[in-house]
Image 1: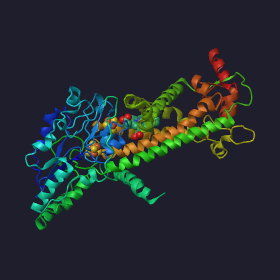
Image 2: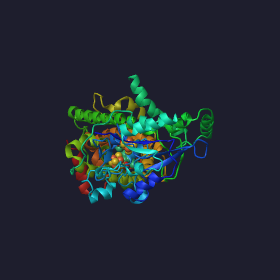
Image 3: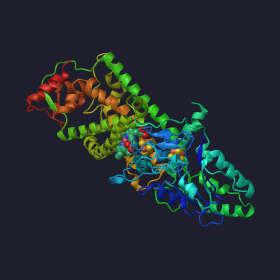
Image 4: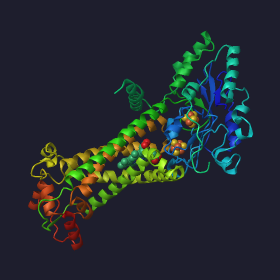
Length: 207
Length: 352
Ligand code: HEM
Ligand code: SF4
Ligand code: SF4
């Protein structure tokens, strides 16, 4: 089975925020939630770089480790998903995640956190593929349609790559060899530095 | 303690707490590092080392997406928090379990601490209505906070495997909401409790002797070392558990409770660690207090329940205070007007 990963090429990203828009559009993400964002490093200084970031679907995922209700699971393709029916909105995954991926719609008074929302690698959630409930809670399940994540597919400069780790790292290696610079595969050490946690079936009753 | 424990667990924790105290919540992009990066591009195009160093350190950058720390590409402290929290809560859990076991063993060995003479039926009004209302509000809220907090800490390991995902998630959501809404009750009653009880918890005669003899726990006569209205054990509990830990829990809890103040993740991680340590120590100490206030000592529960204690109880447990009451020098007085139902309850509490 392929191991799905994201890779953002800092030498190519032009901070157009197309990926952010594509994601919001594809999944009809609620107000105040952004599953993906673009961060510009040294903005305005010659040599500035931009990077698009969302959930990296870590191997030894910190969010999974700290969740007090254990609502995360890993698909056989290494994608980290969660069950919103179980989530209690404690925010612990947000404390732990290196990439700031978990998001919380505000729920009621005092900024109380609602159920966590994050990038699903366009792979939906524990509900039946393509069901109404799945779309409402997690957005479109493009992987089940045989497509790759919307953000990477839309990327105008192909800076953002998403898909089988072997394939995208080959593309990246070729680029680095041709241009002779920018060999840092940003975030991979943090996200994939440790062996994969065991894939598991979704928690909860309805799987 | 192995070196790797020091390196992997203790150092990140200390680093995190030090960072919390000595630096503002977030770093700003350091102009000089950006400049270094720009110069590096001149001499070595394609070498972005200074920039990646900023990224690893979680420096604030620029983004169009609004939100808390959305301009930080990668935060380094989450990993430390993830590694530090489980061993700390485990240690706390073991401490609490040890306390419960010790109390159970003590109960089996000595049984409840009774009084040596029969009650005289002459009652003293030991606690005012305001004191009792405050005590019970705080006591009940602490019990709810402790149980719901422990569900969040350990439920995943101890309840989830037994009751399953769906039921446990429901329970955890209930625990979280109860915790969040009872916390303010504790928050507002804590100062009231401190003001009401501080006077008789100031150091007084007999405190040192009480402490050195462990309150007379191991004395041959089996009599308690004389004390004022509150003994040294109660005073330690008042200052350390109520005042110090109470405030620590309120402050650290509030930091986590209101994410809408836009505080950064580092502050919330540190608050969480402080909260776990404070909570575990408080539950540990509270279990001794609850033991003595219920099954551990006869007459104590009825004292706080009704506000009245028997003269004999006062003499045996708080002799210096009893002498003052008798001399009319205490703020508490003999209560000849106590209702009959209360008399029965107090008398019953003293019976073996
Ligand atoms: C006697 C008082 C208290 C005890 C014994 C207690 C206990 C606990 C425990 C054991 C946890 C779980 C920590 C973990 O595993 O990470 C926790 C979490 C928490 N506590 Fe407390 N706590 C107390 C008071 C408070 C107060 C006064 C506040 C707020 C003003 C508060 C707010 C929180 C929050 C926000 C959490 C995070 C979990 C969640 O979202 O529910 N606590 N507490
Ligand atoms: S990037 Fe964050 S949310 Fe995604 S798997 Fe890693 S820790 Fe979890
Ligand atoms: S917010 Fe939800 S998903 Fe995140 S750790 Fe808490 S319960 Fe788990």
